[in-house]
Amino acid sequence: MKLYDGGRAPNPRRVTVFVAEKGIEIERVPVDMGQMGHKSEEVTSLNPLQRLPVLVLDDGTALSESVAICRYLEELYPDPPLLGVDARDRAIVEMWNRRVEHHLLASVAAAFRHTHPAMKEWEVPQVPEWGEANKPKAIAFLELLDRELANREFVAGERFTIADITALISMDFMKPARIDKPAHLENVMRWYEAVSARPSARIA
Image (cartoon, rainbow, N blue to C red):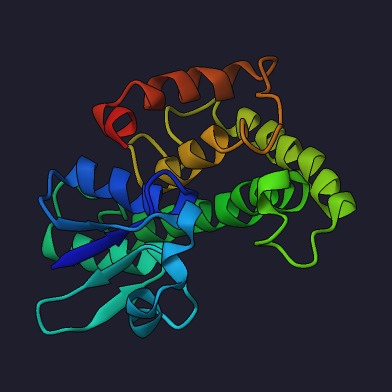
């Protein structure tokens, strides 16, 4: 397998952290997104949407979309389980991962893509008002998550899962999106400090 990797961009990093948690060794093909490497002929031939990451299997199959890649790897390497352990647990993990994707990561990404000067040529048209409108949406979701984390250790329960990976990457991405981390949300910050200290978070 080969993993076409976009570095610290949120979606490539989600897979990098997932792989690190699994302890898997995968050949990496670094792609410089700052130099528009994701729009190269090679990447486009693997993913016509010109997005990263892309996992190329030994038979030549190209998988894109972060969660699809993670699901494939979970099937091959089930331990430790990051997508749930039974039908109920998998549904809960999926529910929370989707919530984080839709209400936190998407809002932080919109804020970054529509307000950061470096994204002017990437996000056309760039709509600064939309970017600013998404900043309070991200904080509103974290307020909800803070209430949830009063009763459990991790986003989807008592075990670290892909939902924590997505939330961690989202919160780290708040800095370039110019959204202040919510220091007043004690449960969120306790969780964030704990997951940020994991070896997988440090190497990715």
